[in-house]
Length: 353
Image 1 (cartoon, rainbow, N blue to C red):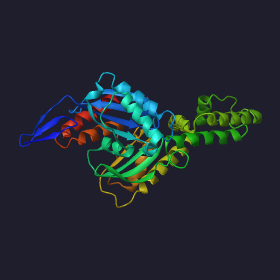
Image 2 (cartoon, rainbow, N blue to C red; image 1 turned 90 degrees about the horizontal axis):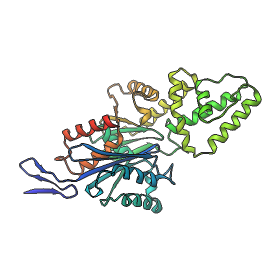
Image 3 (spheres, one colour; image 1 turned 180 degrees about the vertical axis):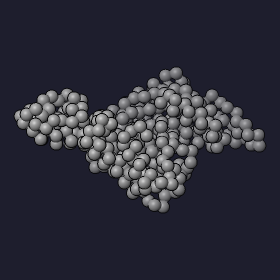
Image 4 (tube, rainbow, N blue to C red; image 1 turned 90 degrees about the vertical axis):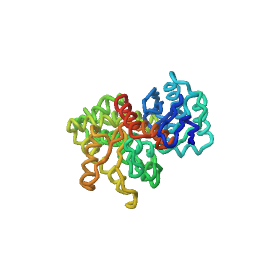
């Protein structure tokens, strides 16, 4: 008697524990506001290929999201026959935008244009981030990158969410939020005629290619106008590009940057704290560049979480796209998605990301 997993062509022989392996592979993708990443892996958890492109969030970048997805797919499949891909999980920020027929058609064209024939399973970026951090099926997860959102995970599926409302009305403590606060701090400094600009202000002015700083009242006002023009002449979400400047200035002790980092961490901790108290017990997974242990925001956030929940140490999801691959493997069942396969997959993700 055999049980056949048709989309992977893996045959599990009951009573023997053996799997007849075919030549099929799985594909996982993580589509965010900063980047679009695709990974192809085999059933042993070995990463075969990767593709990277620009941000593909269909909410914050509706005009370029489909193109970025297609570019990352083609890069990952450059040395892999698309016909070998029999299962795919696509984690996507702003996935609600795919309910729009035109946007979904754009993504469908990118998929078929890359030569893929299997049906992609679009999942929340929170689900793939959680799966990247832990093999457990229940817990909570916070993502803080370009945007910011937290959610409850039960049975590998997303339940209640907090924030993730986009740069215009939400995403507190996100990369966009940091960049906007950096610009606001710069404008406040320029309003003070004759005030010597600090590390953060100087770096913002330099990145925005604004000169004159605040050497005099007239020059300060001219610099303000230049800053305002610079940020309004590009897509608003591009304010997230300034977020790294806050981290660098924080490490140099800039008071404005320290204040911004502290407030960002507090807002992210508050986002997690607003999840229902009845969510399933399990790990807290932190994902996104801002939550990592080497990020000033991540360090401060961990301190706040330790003070509030000392019994729970957060888990870091280092490579969120690996979570999408793991969910694709899970679809084949526990015979395929073993602890050994996950260890190989995570090791490949950490060493090659």
